[in-house]
Image 1 (spheres, rainbow, N blue to C red):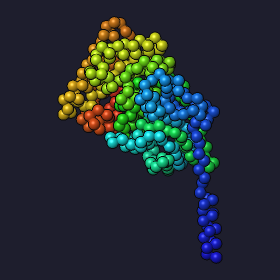
Image 2: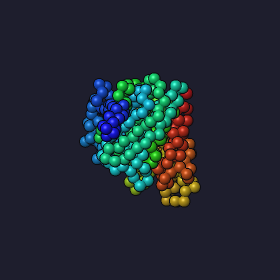
Image 3: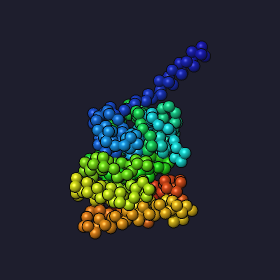
Image 4: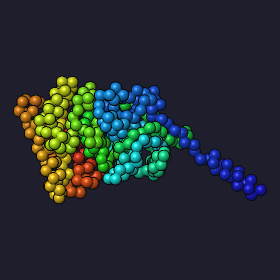
Length: 362
């Protein structure tokens, strides 16, 4: 009798547990993955570059374009609990960057005052990565933003809420985006979570979409990428490639000059109204870092860019601007290895870009 009572109670308790309904963002009637240089065909993938570019870019660039850096999905729901499950194709972490940044997701929401709130999640990094965001304030129509992994490729992903709770994916933002073409620093190395990469912080601060076209070790102002992003009706182009062009043995000054001139010419021809922001090497707080070789390389690359920028201005090239190492202002507590920003350095970057942005769009 007791056993039957226990089984009956267990049945009732199990039935009372709300069933999770899972939603796949790639199975919508409209594109919802934000941050792709060109929205993929509905149901295609999370990759940042379209398949048409596969044979035009170098293999490392194509491989890195499969990483979902800067991509996010927005949705509306009144759920008090949101679950995420997905699989990635690469290593979960790196020696200098945790799994939460390399392979994790990150959930933000707009509150009733239009300010960004953040939700800590409980997570498990296994064959299928899972996140649970619980005890969320139930407000009708709250808009959530889910950032995808910075340094991994998402094979599939689903968002789960309790049965009977509405969830609607939002279509891609129609605002003109800011396009960032950069290196590992802009891709997000080495933020502790996706929402803390500087392009993501920057985008939230100015409430404008940011497309992250950064490729770790491979942000080199290459023609196929320049031609591709030139097709985007952008509000601003940010060229932040000096950390990958600073080696004088691989890229002498004349080659750097050639690439910058070609990039500026192409972008201004295709998008003449969009300003171009050239960015010096962030420097890693080099003034007080005890590595004279690295300090010299960083400083020299910035000097070269400043020189080329002044040459362009002297030629009468308009609508180009410069963000300096000093303006970025990284200190000795700002990196994990003397180059790649930690969360402090990411915030310093974001604040510097925000200040420059507001100067350009007064």
